[in-house]
Length: 86
Image 1 (cartoon, rainbow, N blue to C red):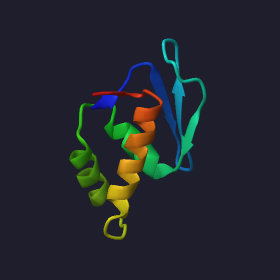
Image 2: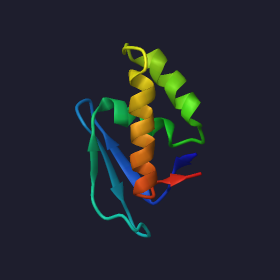
Image 3: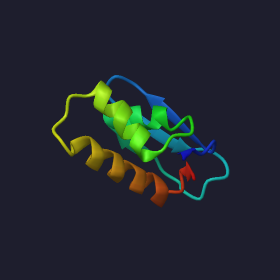
């Protein structure tokens, strides 16, 4: 899966934004933290959920199950708004 080209990202140290551009049924802005930013960056290339989890486990020190839950929740929301090519 990967992020559709009809969405652009803006990621800073503090905040991550996902904004639709022409051709998207979703109209709004998705705001998130640096974890969402890392997920969005990974989704700029074709990757599966397990690959995202593995990359985030290397980057962040989080309790067992937390990374998996965060990734699952983010992917679910991105699917809901139609931001993913699968």
